[in-house]
Structure formats: structure tokens, C-alpha cells
Amino acid sequence: MVLTEQYEVTIVDSDERYICDSTQNLLKGMVQLGRKGIPVGCRGGGCGVCKVQVLSGTYTSKRMSREHVSVEDEAEGRVLACRTWPTSSIELQVVGQLQRAVTR
Ligand code: FES
Figure 1 (spheres, protein in one colour):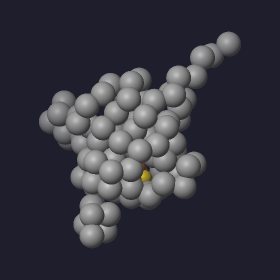
Figure 2: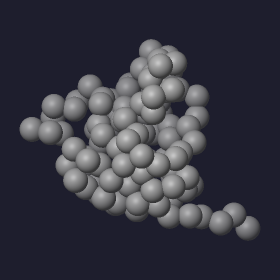
Figure 3: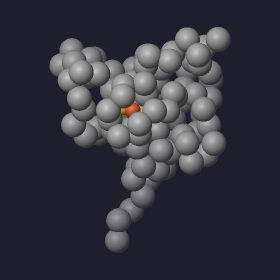
Figure 4: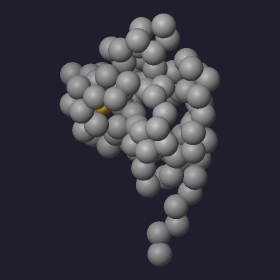
């Protein structure tokens, strides 16, 4: 049996919070609850619009395109939400290409 943990994710740009299962990536967890704080694109790591800066918390991420996430980005916690799974509660900030659309 696989245990699913649930973690709170806070999007600081819009002060939105949602609960994300450890089995769901950050973007899928948000979309499933009808939240809109992180821009949604391809949902598969290809477009880069869901890029976020993790401010606190831990996570695991799958391979991400270097076109969107550089080695420095990854080292500093900038990741694609659709390729990132929470392992604790997380606070993040949107840094993807549609950031202005979110903060307007
Ligand atoms: S939605 Fe396209 S990279 Fe995440």
C-alpha cells in the first residue's frame, strides 16, 4: 500500500493556498482544485510557463528541460510546477513567462 501525504502549497503572488497530494505534481494538484495561481501550459515540462521559485519546503522533481530550467535555477529552487512533487508544505512564487498576467 502506498501512503499518500497531503501538503499545503501557498502561492505567495496571489496568497492562494491549496492542498496537494504527494502523488500529484504541484500544477496538477492546483488545477484539480480549480485554482489558478500558477500559469498552466503544456503540463508536461515543455513550455516553461509554470516555472516557480520555491521559497520554503522540500520537493522532488523529475527531469526538466534545460531550455526552461538552468543548472543554477535548479540549484536555487526554480522549478517547473508540472515536474515537481511536494515532500513537505511549500511556499512558492510564480516566475514563469505569464507572471504579469497573474499579478495584475
Ligand atoms: S505547464 Fe508547460 S512546463 Fe509546466
